[in-house]
Length: 170
Image 1 (cartoon, one colour):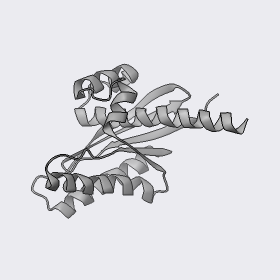
Image 2: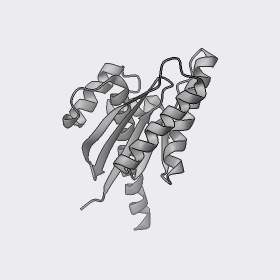
Image 3: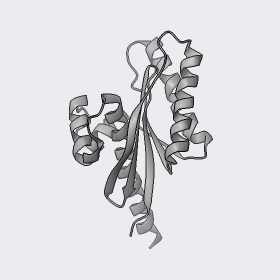
């Protein structure tokens, strides 16, 4: 019997941060919970980062994940937007790391390829596939689906990496 691993997936954003918690036992995935952390409109940048951190630490306390995974920032043409998103991503990395969790990072294309099979899948395809892989998740906001996709990607990679370690040990 495979050990059950609880994974928190995070899709960082300065306005909306998506999160999703799944359990992985071997190749079996189970939906636990998902949602979003919304920052207050008009709040100062530092206040928004504090809201994201507070929301994530509350989730970590509530769901007690064993591992965390965060989507890497997609660098766009606007340097200011990339900087703001990078700050939110820093908080998304800090919160689980400050509680002793190892935090994996995955590029958006890797997440899409792991979940849909194509690195350039659109949001609707990701959302549809997440619902197929986690049928108990119900209707999802796109940020939730993205966070669950990050967790699924990590489950696939973590399972693959542990299989390689077992093969090397024998």
